[in-house]
Image 1 (cartoon, one colour):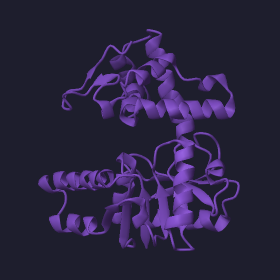
Image 2 (tube, helix red, strand yellow):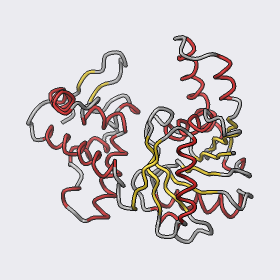
Image 3 (tube, rainbow, N blue to C red):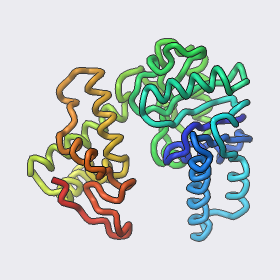
Length: 292
């Protein structure tokens, strides 16, 4: 089986690694709009392997075998995949243009399945006007570790493609959950508003950052508190998903917290920028910030 992953950021590189680690996958094309972006995704995978090797958690030969399956480059190298997984920016126009180019100009395999890793956008809308159907195949970060894949059918997604993607998910050692199309699907429809509410609680002065995160970790047995998790996901992503859910439902309970918008405007996005609700200057000792 050959797989093309479009987008070599954190999610894309993680998805590529997850596929490359699968014995049934012979080739993974890790693609991006610039070759250096794709190479950066490959380097991220290699760096993770190097750390595991140094700790005695992985053999060099095993790492080399996985990395040998991965070819990096522009989208144009994805000529013969059996499956395309798009992990580009969470922008409808970018996703539609990406699939249109792949289907009409690049991919030559007529049986190729086209999947989007979108975390909240409509699969039906992504596929509208395209020559071939689209399905949602939503991985979770970190993709090589997290077991869940949300499988989302759009209005025009054939049942046989849904079943095939579920089979591929199981082949990878993942657990597929079939989800009806709805803004945010299942996990993000519940999780992202919880993070947003945590920000509202902080903005209202109910407790400080560490207090809110500690309360949710110890009171609900969550591995991360909502503010720390928002930093880890990326506050820009949290805001984008909140806006999609709000626009789709019109329900005021999904309105983004003003402080969340302020943080995104100020480029305090969390781990990716080094500062959000916590300061990540010293990764061994992150400290809460005065986010207000």
